[in-house]
Length: 355
Ligand code: PHE
Image 1 (cartoon, rainbow, N blue to C red):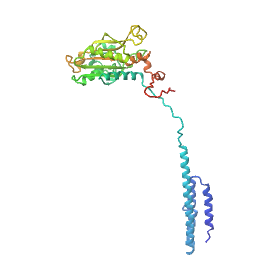
Image 2: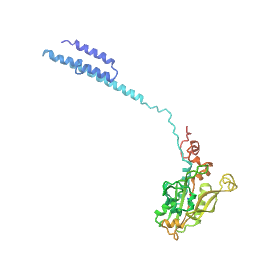
Image 3: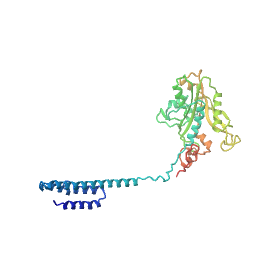
Image 4: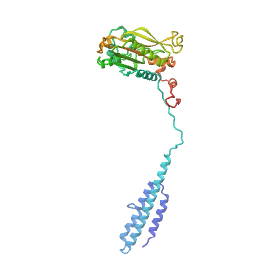
């Protein structure tokens, strides 16, 4: 039996294997030697031409050759896989020493902050927070508040109408009307209602077509003007400083009677007169009054049994006064140079200047 051919094949295979570097060429090599028309397979086919005596020894030799080649291929395959894994791991390495990316931490908008402060104060007095709808009906925005269709006082609030009956609320007072109606004339009410309101004003330093209001409403048995005054006095001291005083001036709102404008003593000049209070020593801060009997009646409350007070204030104005903001438009144009001045640090947030 001539085994030199086998040795030759083995040598050639070994040389070829040396040059293999990836799974694909390894596969090609495998086909060339072990595939259907491969060289080892060719040797197997020779068996039929051999004599019975020669065949077993020959068969054994060819099998040995095949096993050798199979083992080498397997070994090479494992090597290639290991190398590929290594390469992938190398590419995926994370450099834990790299500095982290800095985030721009946002901060609370001055209006949100004022609203939260005011909410906190009233929650402390046992008020609930109620929100209404920015898109309202004419009925709740006006009629239920004692402002029938042709009432001249509607002119006080220039309105964006969506249709004849639907509008963008001009104040937060419709929430009063809705809550009173919901409570069905029986339960006491003690709520504040923060939210956005809209008016057809031309924007300038003190007017914006969109702004915020906070409405307050208390309805119960035996509620008097003195309750309103005491509540607002506490409010002024809490929000503007303990030395503040308030002053009530007669005014008119269709949904309150009597109605008042409420001023606080100027926190800047303490009453002496300055640019903030326009030399008067007083700053107008909100509108208020005793809930009009018609409003109570329309919502199902008996005005002989129940009474209440309501007030409405503008957090925008409070923010402007508190932070000395001269133009209301700053509150709505979202200029980061403006907004970033209100960043808080006390909440633990990092103060990163925006780029
Ligand atoms: N709704 C009034 C306004 O927007 C403010 C107000 C509310 C007055 C409640 C009195 C009572 O001008």
